[in-house]
Amino acid sequence: MAEALRVGIAGLGTVGASVARVLRDKAAELTRQCGRDIVVTAVSARDPKRDRGVDLSAAKWFDDPVKLAEKADIDVFVELIGGDEGPARLSVKAALEAGRHVVTANKALLAKHGVALAEIAEKKGVLLNYEAAVAGGIPVIKTMREAMAGNAVTRVFGILNGTCNYILTRMEAEGISFDACLKDAQRLGYAEADPTFDIEGHDTAHKLSILTSLAFGTKIAAGDIYMEGISNITQADIRAAADLGYRIKLLGVAQRTDSGIEQRVHPTMVPTASVIAQVHGVTNAVAIETDILGELLLSGPGAGGNATASAVIGDIADIAKSRPGFQHAPVFGWPAKELKPYRKARMRSHAGGYFIRLTVHDRTGVFAAIAKRMADNDISLESIVQQAAGAETQAQKTVILVTHETTEAAVRKAVEGITKDGHLTDKPQVIRIERAE
Image (tube, rainbow, N blue to C red; front, side, top):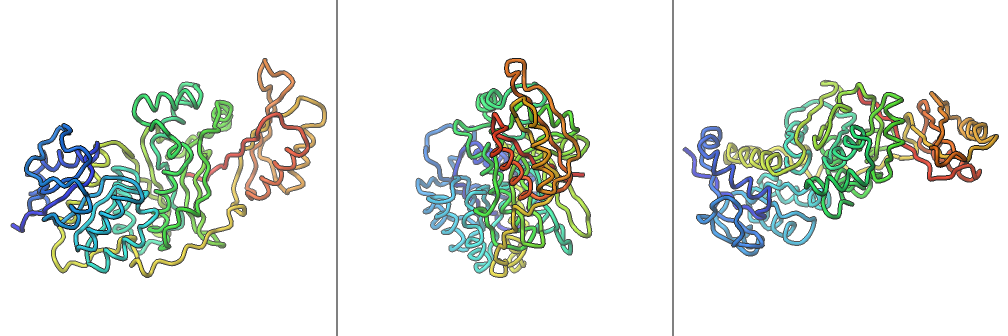
């Protein structure tokens, strides 16, 4: 049997403790699968005295994760600290430069420094594995990087944030407000005390930027993603979507267009009958469209200690199975130095159907003025519905428009015109309708 694989873990929070516990509890099974023992020989965390539910007394303690990465007798450095700078970045860089394999769940780090770290890993001939960084326990990274040889990806999209999906699911199922759902999500531990990173789309954007690089062979460009969150989604939107045969999901979408690669994160209406519309609660899902395979949908637990730990352990097991001299797959599917510069598509040229909700003064001529603004911008309407805004606001009406395929620029120009006309009593709502078979 080959020598034991020595693992150092930096970060012993929920995920790190779960990884250590599973490596202990499943030791015999992992040895049988990998052909060698996997042993935690070094750890680092903020508090050495905290009870983490697993005995780590046999592992050497390091107060500084960078020292662990540089000095410990390890073969694999597991980074579960978090953050895109500071100890996380410094320790991962140090481990790679020391010729150690790295496993990380840190999407923010990869979104900002992934290409530079990949160049070091490939130069040193070591692995940089990050399955847990995107969609939790769903094996989407391995699928895209290793299992789809010969396939040209045309579009990748999905539900990449469990907090947002939980909130939207509850809003629809129980008819309660966004704020009430968010408070419940925080109470249950699905949302942070400061939920901005999740609900405004940043978390989804980081994950999408990694998938974009894998899909299209481009350098990671998290800063070039069009982004909207879900904080402005109301019960009026949820009900209107249901009436029209749609369900609202926060999607991350990346696709190749004539003008470049389009990356966007925003609330989206998907047909209720589509598979992705059936993904509820904290579950994640990723759809990959290719020229050979067609569409592949991967769905499963997207967050939590066990789901993330499962992905981390899978990455460690892959390293344990590898042998000296084996040619590793490039970190992002293409050699890091061959990744193409990212060319951003013209977002406002995005074509598709749109849902538009307008709260307007209930007076003569408003309906005709709205229709004229649409016609002036060559927007064809699939449906238009007028309804009372509520008994307490009888001087207002809600107008729901659903367009046929048109451009983002045309919709925005029409809505700006309606706003300038002085007919609106509230901020307009525009939600894209996504093709999702």
